Image 1 (cartoon, rainbow, N blue to C red):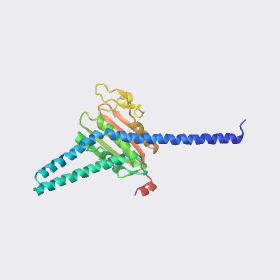
Image 2 (cartoon, rainbow, N blue to C red):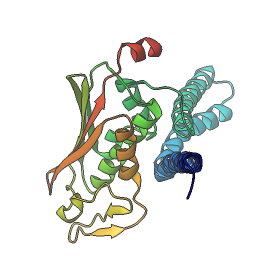
Image 3 (spheres, helix red, strand yellow):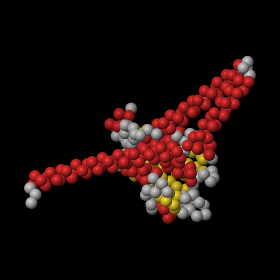
Image 4 (cartoon, helix red, strand yellow):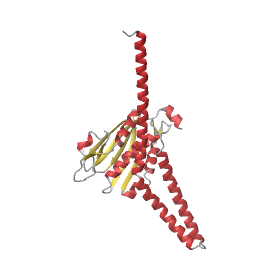
Amino acid sequence: MDTQEEKISQVEQLLDHFEILESQFQQVRDGLTHSHRLSTLGTIASIIAHEYNNILTPVISYAQLAQAKPNDIKLAQKAIEKAMIGAQRAAAISSSLLGFARESDSQHVAKLGETVDEAIACLGREPRQDGIELTLDLPDVLIAMSPLNLQQVVLNIILNAMKAMKRGRGALRISANVRAQIVHIDIADTGPGIPENIQNRLFEPFVTQKLNDKDPKEHRGTGLGLCICRDLVKAVGGEINFTSRLSQGTTFHLKLPLADDLFINDAM
């Protein structure tokens, strides 16, 4: 029979093993979250490429005109002005994308309005250019969540909404209010809604929506976005759910903790 000391040693070894497994699991989880951010960048690559083309086209055109008329000082100044505007716009887009591609951040407090703006900036172009009316109604509050993780959650929901509304014009509204130290965020679209047959499993891994007006059935793909969003929200003690009606749109509801005084002082 094992002695008491041997039993204690076995328990300690088992606990050590669990700690190693937990650490390895967290590493895999963090890696998956980062991989999803990179996958999101791939999703918006075509949008970014199109926007960069829109930036470069007038720059090149004015440069060619100025080159053809080297003595036209006003034209040369106009070309320089266009080049500067284009370069600043391209730099802003690149900065947003590089920030989003970071593996992690060390901050624990997110400024709501600023984080949402960064998520929209990652799109590379204003939603209205794609026929989507964007409305923001956000209070100036701090949320007890990593800015990068909050940005990932918001951007994923925005991309899903824009994809759902791609067949026609639509509206996207992001609003928030504070109740009992909880920040309630609603992200609402006027898309076709989520089919009822996948609503109760929407946050499961590998469940995605097939956007087919005649046959809106589910199909299994690599849909990890909402699953990761749920984990990121739950990790800070928050909640995420949604309401959706066919042909009337979908609203995602986020409940996130308001940053306390300690976090606010650190963020400032």
